[in-house]
Length: 166
Image (cartoon, rainbow, N blue to C red; front, side):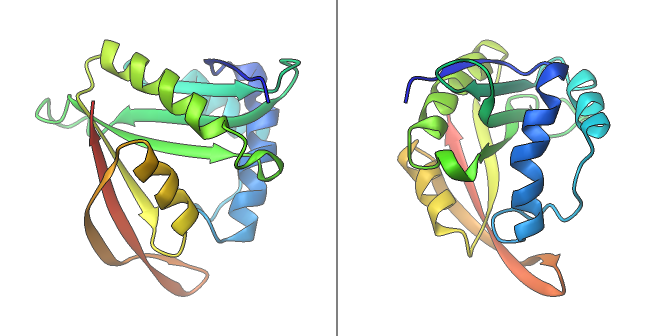
């Protein structure tokens, strides 16, 4: 699959919601438990932090988003974490295992470095081994487990904490 990666724009909101909401509704791959409207996503993109990184991967025709990835500053209440970003990755179910995440990681790592990030951090559901394997292939390392860190649909979920130094 030939893919194009670019920064997210408000016009991508519908495609992003079309990817994200089914993942949320399924309740298996994210701790997010509330779906988003197109308006919510447009506002999120509009208000995205200037130091953040928000990429979308477009299909070969460039007509629709097949995945997205973002990095947000770890904390706004102190400058002690300015070098750390929180990363999240989402790929349309029909496009998984086709290199979408890999191309997003490459673009995101480059832009994150240029924005002063030295380390990326993520939380991955313990019951999502495919996501964990994807991050580990990109050089992330497991640094711990947060027990019963999330509670989705009444079920406790451990989260694996991972990090990568850029």
